[in-house]
Length: 144
Image (cartoon, rainbow, N blue to C red; front, side):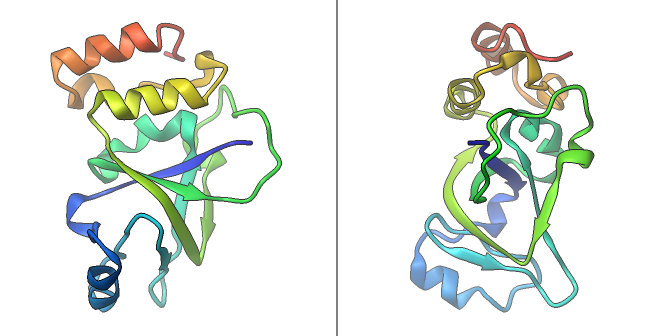
């Protein structure tokens, strides 16, 4: 099954259920592990297949893993993340990971079997040298 994810800003993360509920009237959607975020009146919530998540780093420095029921077994390859993006009114957050971290790199590497379809997106300009090297060591066959 394909895993979907999105990049979010740290300011959008609630630490617990109570904080999540208190922050529902904020301008931007709030996310919390285990909670379901609901789109604002004229907004839709987007996410991309996990292999494209590093293309979305400009949208935030955290990765939210989103529950998306699907039966697809292969990640898209040789397309733009825009053509593989899906939108919805509600998104259940399964996990939140700091984007520039070994944990995020490992999560992508461990869950996308065909590493040649993983894109490095904004890794080069946004990651520090140590994490860039780790990305290239951990995912040596990424799509350039």
